[in-house]
Length: 468
Image (tube, rainbow, N blue to C red):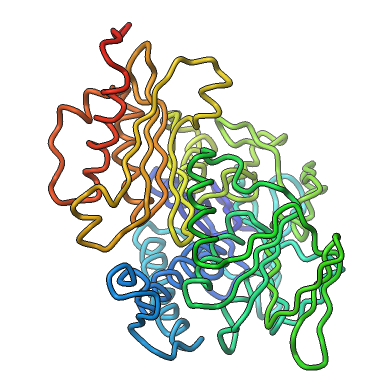
């Protein structure tokens, strides 16, 4: 039986970062990946594919230039599913090549196969060719990620009724689409296909969406979606989904409304991919959604030498935070010191338009009874925004009236996921409104919106003295 210092199950963001971190500390590491290639959900069906699809759709559709040339403008008149897939395959090949090189450079061993517990320190791996390998490790990191939730009442067929993993393999772009689920994944794909001029209807039983995002940002986002004729049926549930003889799909909602569409994307949640791990043999138990509970500081499970990181532990389920979770878990697992990460991290939603946020929302500030003021800048107020033809986009900052410190930054619009890092740095370094007022920003840039929003807040705050 092979012995390892750390056995990592899954090679997504958490798994690969954890494995490489342990290897850099001189430990013997094995990564087990059940997919055809390393990279996990993030590389093959999640983060990288959806963002590549988004970028390809925006480029080929001419979306970014429509502010100048009108809504009918297109770079490529007839866009096919193959056009989208061609760029995706190139991107995925590059990601896998980089990851395999990282493993080789850091002497991380990896094999393909399905792993399951024999006991809390031993796992059995069934390789693709049927060979069974048994390995043991001082510590184990579970970074198995998630898979789409597929309820029995949805007639999935991989062609007209699909989950988010299957969407990447469609043969042709639909003229109309219904997306069930107004979570991050559903919203991202709904807006991407809307940018390709597919008529999109978004359905969710909740009457609100993205409740963890600042309400003013969500309101602006919803306005932009409705302005381009996306239908948002919030507070309504799809009771029945039925494939029709003519190849279309009919949905019946709980209020009796019926919708006929070319394609249905079911994106109402994901499940932790833990069902094949035989968790009971290790003394572990997952929740109803297949997720594992961990110590939020060390990512240790109920069994001290077994750790879990990434989407399998739940919110925030971001590739960026998963990487940090994997790194911290690996350091703790091999006995190294692990510093707690900064309090605030950026959350990015790669919809069209993008949303990104860091820190407290206005609703959270109110709940904490913190005296505050907001500063707002609209991208159309910046010269760069005008040059780019932007008539939408909003940057909002929230400041404490007592300390004048930045409490939160929230952005909706072009480049939001890039711009947010300026606010993130100031937030974690406990900067104040004066930073934005007194510093120079490149001109013309969208980042100049920070200056505009800072001045807006500063003017409203008046001569209120800081208690720093």
